[in-house]
Image (tube, rainbow over all chains, first blue to last red; front, side, top):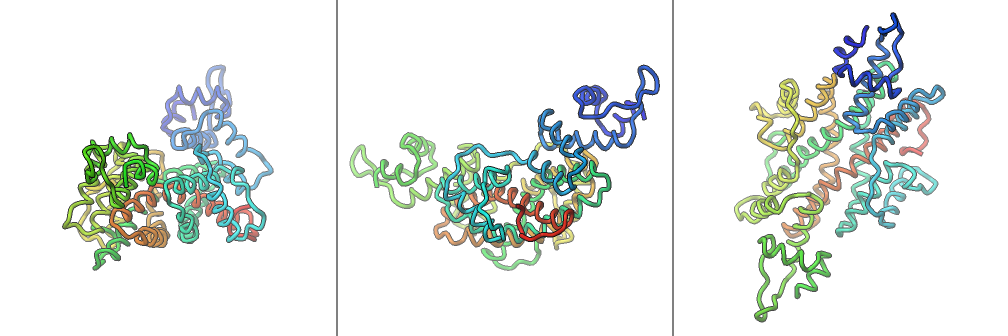
Length: 216
Length: 216
């Protein structure tokens, strides 16, 4: 297809596609004449992935380039590639870490079979967790860590559904794009459904007579 | 206690306490002399709640005033008060709604015993959900709604733990403060633990041999 059709099928404007080509986020098309290039479905897939990383993930062009390099590494398993992308789309937190919150995270990992003591600063995800627990402790909530085990139990059900959603896609680019969209848009879906579940559980406990399992 | 001790015990600076008093977010203390007032534990509780709403919830002073009015309504059940606060701390989304995404939300409610068709714009929470599904559809992900049922299943476990955390507090102000902190800081904890659960499930499915139930 020509660039015009690539734009139409992806929903990305032609000048944006040309910008991605210049920045090396999209491989060049095959020249069919001195000023006309041909693009295929691989370009369309990569373009969708770039758009998800930029628009949904809010990543900078430099970070997108790093993520694509990780994806294009031949020797990595898909699991490791997904891990690299997950790190890139998980914002590291900036607040100060409370040593007690760091210990809470380490104890959580220890309870779940992690034998060596983890360094929470080694991953954006553990850093996010330690920062949230630190922030709770700073305002006197020092028992939020007790929620970690039930959270993990519920999230295993959710993560299984997430992975099933992701692996129904076939090409690695599509799998990774689905993971980015599913993780980031999924965060908001989860927030909303959590509030609906709160209302339901609260109605059962605090005002009796649950006749539906969602709030009126 | 005097204002200095109220400040020390709450961690809120004296000028901020005086500002809250002027804005009517904190009831006046009992005057013990023309320029000295006495505050009690109720003031301390209310101050903690105001701080959670402002600092963790990011609410404006005007919204905090509305939330406090809802809490102080005598005839409401605690369940209804929690619902009012939940609405206030759930940011309404601004994106355009896709009618298909709205139908997805309505179908979800219908599957869970809601017999009348709901108006998604009536609550910030359903609006948040419809907006997230609309945003996914706008980039070609029209099957995210299939995740809603497994999400609800996992979130019921999580919401039960959340409510147990909240109701271990005794005064209504403390219950509501714990709900604000638990909901908002809990959102981030949940995001982080979801990513850990992703890594675990992905390792089991995509690279075999899970010897721990959390990622290395």
